[in-house]
Image (cartoon, rainbow, N blue to C red; front, top):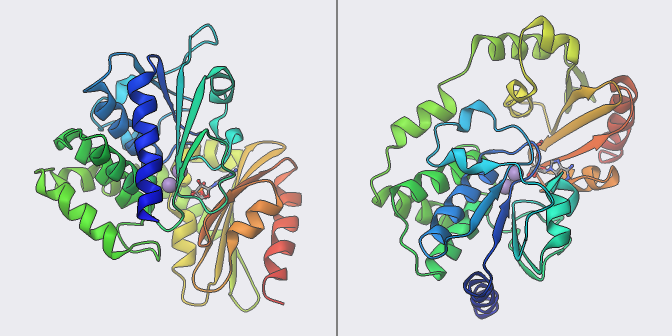
Length: 324
Ligand code: AMP
Ligand code: MN
Ligand code: MN
């Protein structure tokens, strides 16, 4: 496996050396892993090549605005010449949103990801579902490029890994995750500052939205399933943004009886983003795949194009099937 991984990484490094106009693309509703991995790889490639750009496909949540070089996230028109397209933390091209059109123009595509549902859309696919975060793979890849992991790169990779492992707590956290984190700490990053930005910076609006969502959630199957919603009405009532729903679904999972936690977010009247989490037994990536989404065994998501009430019914039906 390691030889195979080395060979894949060798080829990807060759592509980076060979091609000039390089685009690294974020996914829609970007999270810490996606943003951190993207910035880290951008900085590493920038040490060697001039023309590397970062494609913004959605708003950057305010939690991540402290990251070094965050201003390189920009929107690009289809007039751009795209030689090499690098996708990070996306299981399929739909997750790239408007970035998909740039991908179509690329001569070569590198797909680096850790989702078990990744469909291998790249010319080179470095997909390792056993890793906790795309940030872990990018760490290895930057080492493979022989680029120095400086403090800024380490700050971004630490953010990627910390957020995707739920602060090193989720079941995807391994011995290797901790080894990599320890190497990142060696560079002298300020984890107190990183942690304050990521986890101790909650706005009052977010707290109020959280309380309303939790107060109105419902339980099924003796509390094994918990479902909450965030509607557009709730957002305006609390003066909150969609990104403020971060943390609700994992809080529900923390309830002792819960095996599956679900949050439905109303993007618009007939577009509902579903987040799924499980604790020990249920593979939620399969539920998400049923609705054209994807993810991991214990954390997955999808979008349902229907009203929030209908979406809730069909998702609950699918979750209930997992308990039969
Ligand atoms: P979320 O609930 O949005 O935090 O997502 C949980 C996990 O599922 C993350 O690893 C996402 O990358 C993945 N995921 C969420 N939505 C989708 C989707 N529509 N398609 C594929 N993967 C998704
Ligand atoms: Mn992600
Ligand atoms: Mn990830």
